[in-house]
Length: 138
Image (cartoon, rainbow, N blue to C red; front, side):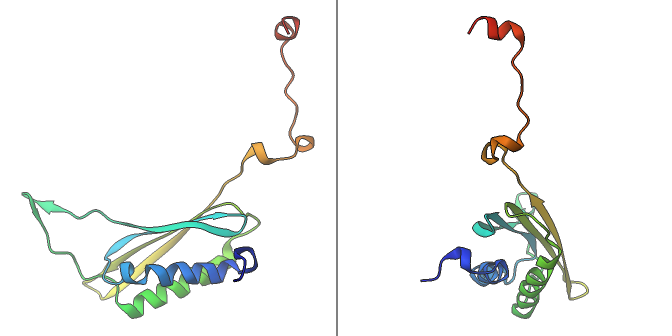
């Protein structure tokens, strides 16, 4: 079995979209979210936009993504990775929506980098001096 760190992030994103293919097919709008730690996918999922109702009755959903559109969405997600720069921890959010009236879809990508001060080496973190009053009581 191959270690996850030896698999490129592009291949991992490809895997994520293949796992979500059934959920994405016929989905009319939502967000694919991918959590990354050390350049490896930690968890992923799909947030579906809420189902709306009027007068207590659920409306028929608009037509969602076709299988071909899901494949195009997966390729767009992989291609968009070239805009991610110099971070190894964070989230990638792919928002999408289908416009049934024009038989088209759109998507956007949001990158969020995360940093944790607790994991940084002490020589790089400025030392905070204790106030004189606290030192006197220690």
